[in-house]
Structure formats: structure tokens, C-alpha cells
Image 1 (cartoon, one colour):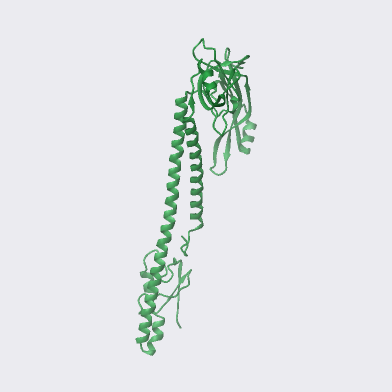
Image 2: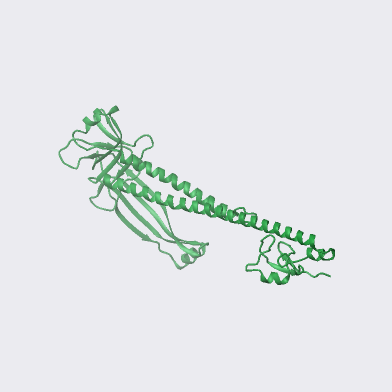
Length: 352
């Protein structure tokens, strides 16, 4: 706290930062909670022969937010893995990721750093079909890359370390970047894989489509079953809730600390003012009762003992209010008895 009783700049920054972080965490928690609530309220529909009749009876032949589980089946052609034989899928993602060590001038340490230098995703049309054979029903999946949780399986992964000469090592050390190598990854959504879709289910003429939902709801294509997907979302909500409560408590504690410090400072100032007024009243009474020749000596008397002359100048406040004996008797840390500022040094005062 400053001498005037106002919060310091550091305390304002701490309180402001804590408040902003709490507000951001609360906003994220509300978003996560809303997503989990919408997911919990999604209608679970069995992928079977009666699916078309269910959609026909629905308003607009549409279920705005539905859950459907099935197996992946390609419509026409399939995608072949570039690295694994007899591995076919409907979505293929090839990624090249560079790994390197970067020198941090602040911590004086080498930190791992990675960056995607190339990524390509190939998609072919596919359907969701029942896991049981013999059912002639399929759901066409639209815009799969717009889904929030695309359940791709890593089928190939290899790290290619960088080969460096001695000159390259010296150059990279001077530049602050040391390449480690490139990681090559292939991910696929395989044919026959189990997939859970959460989105808008629409009956259009004779075909059924699963597409991104409207009204800002999340679109999911996950390799997990619906119960696991919902449990993961609810766990995320609990985590954000705990973080929000922790930072909210920290903000309240900071505010309480600042207000309490202000209250203590204000109470101390009032006490000092009362002491100063009482001293001046006492001094006035002594002056009124003293002889004329003693009044001048009382005006220059030490404010603490009222018997010795004032002989110390306190810095940085500049008050002359104490004798040397009373100054040495002040408790540590020594403060001026008039303004309560810290005494950094004392200059002796000599009366001629």
C-alpha cells in the first residue's frame, strides 16, 4: 500500500489480471457446459430398418440433433494407405511435422519446438451402416472435416532424424535453433471402423443424411461410443468449473486483502490523528500553565518525552520531533512518530 492508503499499481495489476482470467475461465466453462448439455439432450436413434419411418414422422423429416452409431462403408472408391498394405479408408491425413530445439534467452534453456510444415487430407464419400449384416439402410455423412472430433487412427508414424555436419551444428548453435528431424504421420478413418455421429439427421427423398447441425451446436464424428463421448465432455466441464472456482477464489482473496489493507491503513491514520490532536491539546495546556520563560523551551521539546530538546531530523519526511534518546528507543523498523513514514537516515540537529 502507498502512504496515502491507496492500492499500489502492482496490486491493481494483480487484481485486474486475476479478474480477467476468472472472467475468461467462466466464459469457457459456460460454453463447455452448454455443449455438454446439448450433447446430453441429443436424441439417440438406432440405425435400423425403422429409421426412415422415424424420420418421416419427425417435423420436417428432420431430427435437429441426433446421435447415430454405425460402421464406416465407402460409397464407391476407397483410399489406400501409402505405407501400410491392405489398409483402406475413407479419410486420409498425411502430416509432416518438423521438430527442433530453440534457445530461450529468458530461461537460458533449450526448449523443444514443433511445427507442421505440410498437411494434406483426402476424403471420399462414405456412409454409416448397421454393424449387423443384412440391413439395407445407410446414412450418408456430409462434411466430415467440419466435425469437432474426427476419429482418425494413426496407421503409420516414422521419425526421420536430421543429418548434420560439424559446421551445421556450430551454425545452428549460434543461430539458436537446432533441428532434430521430421516426423511423418499417416492417419486414416478405416473402412469398417465404428463411428459415432452427432448432428442433424435429415430424410431427403429416399436417402438419409447426417450433416452439421444448425443453431451453433457441435458436430461430432468420433471413434468413441456416445456414453464415452458424453463422459469426456462432462469431465471437461468439471475441470473448467474447478479452474473457474480456484481463480474466482483467488480474485476474492486478492480483493479482500486490498480492502483489509486499506481498512488497517485508514484506522492507523485515524489513530495517529487522534494522538497528534491529544498531544497538541496537552502541549497547549502545558504552555498555558507554564511561566513565560518556559514556554519557548516547551515548543522545542521532544514530542515523546517532553523533557529534552528536539535534536534529530528524520529523512525522508523531514520532521524534527524527537531527541536522540527517544529516537534510539523507537522499535524496529523505525518510523516517524508524526507521519509514520520509514526513517531511512537521521541528521543531528545542533542548536546554537
